[in-house]
Structures are given as structure tokens and as C-alpha cells.
Length: 185
Image (cartoon, rainbow, N blue to C red; front, top):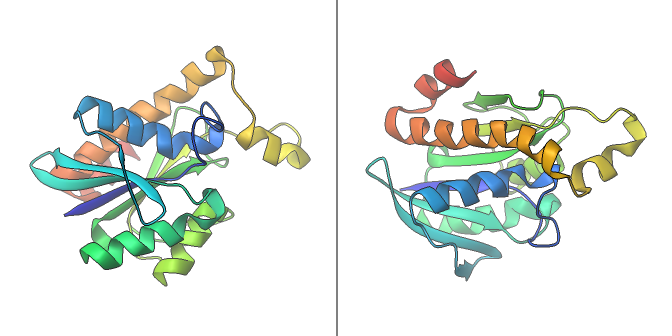
């Protein structure tokens, strides 16, 4: 079993924001594979199904970004999911718009959601996909940049990364993180 997690803030208030790239990837995958994200448990909205012949849980933690790890930890413990089968997807300002980066493991960098996941799992050994959102022009404008509503033109550019990330999830499930990294990094 795999746990595929998108990080973000509760919808609809934070829909169409840069910080919700993880949720947007989960929504895209759920739609493609007709997985209903209607169940609630462990501070998250989730659904389960089969993708690339693997049983998956698609999860959107509802704890707000900075506490995302709390929900993930509960799912990991309850379903006894090994960390190498927990794929976490989130936005990254250090990556250009339309670009994604996959990693097998590593530190959370400056991303508070990723910091929460590392803290709650007591490990950096889980795969992740970072979706590029680019840097704000003014460093002091970072909060407004990540949670501010986007117009359709900017969102269309971000959708390039959302699409790549959803394809990378499929590759990860089909062939593993190493092949997915080689193909998408």
C-alpha cells in the first residue's frame, strides 16, 4: 500500500494558491483515476483506489500546512505504511514554475509543511515531489506570494508543474523512485 500526500491548506478558501500545489496534484490524480476524496479520518480528507496496479490512499491533510505531519503520521501508523511508500507532494519557491524535483529522501529545507512531516515521522527518509512555484520579487512578500489567490493566466503556468507531478506519481508507483527521478529531474 502507498500513501500519496499532497500538502496544502483547506479548500475552498485556499484553492488556486501557490501553497496548494500538493492538493492540486492529488485532485488531478483523483479525478483521472475516479478516486473520490470524500472520507475523513486522522485530520485529513482522503480516498483510496488502485493506480498502476498498486493500492493507494490519496490524502489531503486538513491541519493547515504547518501541521501537515500530524495527519500523515496517523495514517502511516494506522495502516503500517513503510516510509519508502509515503510520497509527499508540495510547493517549492526555489524551483522554477513548470518544473518539478523528485527526491528519495532529504531535509525539509525552509518549507514549514515539509518540516512538520519530518518532525512527526522522525525521519527524512521518505520520497517527495516538489512543484516549482518560483520566487516572489520581494523577499518580504513570501506569505502573500504563497497563499494569495492567483489569476487564470498565472495558474495555467503552474498547471504545467501540476501535470508533470501527477505523471511522476504514476511513474513512481509503476517503476519506483529511482526511475521516476531519472525521468523527471
